[in-house]
Length: 113
Length: 110
Image 1 (cartoon, rainbow over the protein chains, first blue to last red):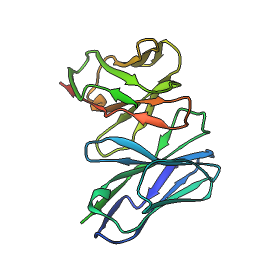
Image 2: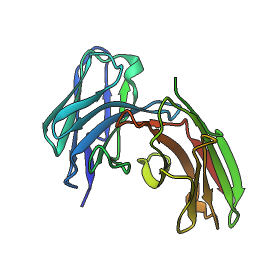
Image 3: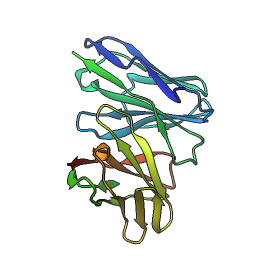
Image 4: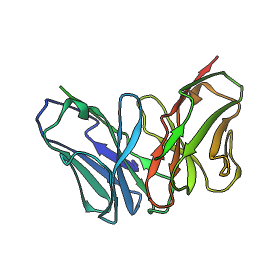
């Protein structure tokens, strides 16, 4: 039983393409997040949704657009991919916004060539 | 501004005790979390401190001093499987988000 799952696990694509990463959690949590981890392992929050409502929108290029069709799913769409977008993207969830324990998905390693 | 500082790398021997420090400067403070991440894996939650003092969970303990803006993770009876990166993360009281440190890579040698 996977708690937080992401697809795909690996994504290799060329500059200028558009791609999506999907995330699903079966924990019944209300809050979901997208993080970006760069090559130096620095982990940075990008977005957060609580019950399908956007509550955190960090300073990321507007080429990145999250979408939450329901509280168990949070997808990330990236337009016009650039070399600097290469990173590992983690989805995470927590029971609520007040809950400090976040459960992370396995990550999606995005490589832009 | 906000910043968290951790040592970049720590090496220790199997069976030993190691302490990973974290100092923070944030505009607000709600609590300090610790996460473990093995190479190629996902971060996993270890502990959380909102109040001063020591929290113990098995071989791992976490300490917080709010007045010193300082915390540490203590790992006892080190095992080879403890080789991983350890991140401290601050939750500010004005926001729901976690601000992560740059991580400490722990290498446990036989």
